[in-house]
Length: 154
Image (cartoon, rainbow, N blue to C red; front, side, top):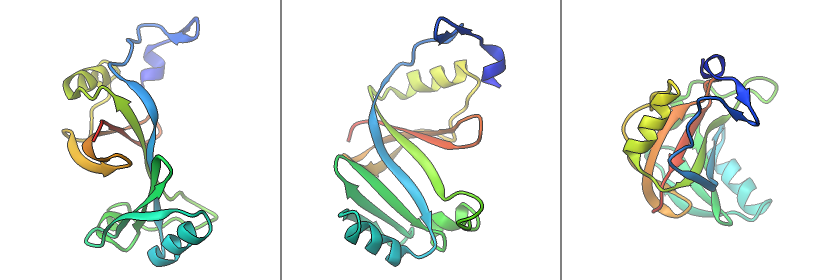
């Protein structure tokens, strides 16, 4: 919807305000997996990732990947079941959401900025674990329904 309300002007979208934050990097990416143990083994042995934290109650494993993280969610776990059935390799998708590390994290300013673009967050900011540790997060969806998480400092 926001694309129809704004038109590009000199590389920017007319009427678009500057965000009240700057993206520093991708904090983490979340994959939905069928076999959590096999996936953890793959990322450890093939890519050299290490387990930073396990949340067995959620079916979630956080893997350290340099300054960022890859999170693996078992489709059979609490979080995975909320996302529906697992996608098959030839159809569907297994990415849960993209997390962008931002600075500063001013919830009111971010919510106002999103609202100016006709976007409502999925709920209030919550404290979640990421590449730097626990810190504030706010979730919303892009025009195609992909979930974006904006993450503040730990």
